[in-house]
Image (tube, rainbow, N blue to C red; front, side, top):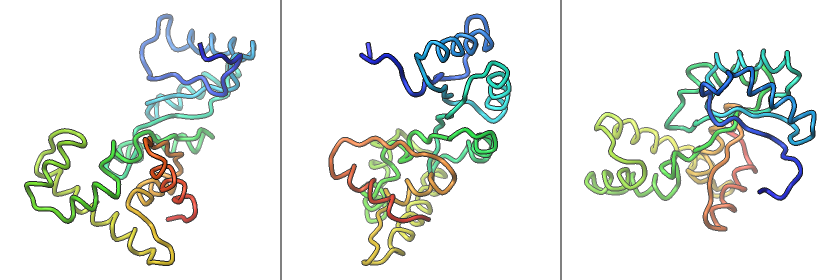
Length: 199
């Protein structure tokens, strides 16, 4: 259906209990590699223990593991705290951060709107972004929005930065390859500009 003979990375979407077990799925992937159907294998949503176990299995089978796609952003650092990112880097896998902008919450538009609006409006901003938040979560968001804005403003007028760029750089500074979604050309330009500086 893709119209190509081979894909660069074949990713396993989740560490589910596959029919025949994990050994069977990776034996099939070893065969796909041998046939030239893919060049490497990626993981998605595997934690540190699962990454290590799968890496050991793949080494025995001769399957090159390339990536582990994880949910990671400035509002959700679970995969940093549980050692997943560190394990990936130790074993030579590239951690790929999906949702690096927290589904739009960690963007300039949302951060500025949140910081400069009344309390009642703040609830609407968050509700429209990712559902209902508990009061303690909203309080935590306020300090994160303030930090995003402070780092963005620290660039000054000669090195203009946005909260969106800071959020992307946050993931990159932790060793992740962020894959933010864009719907408009100006969003792509803003994200590309994040590559011109480092945290």
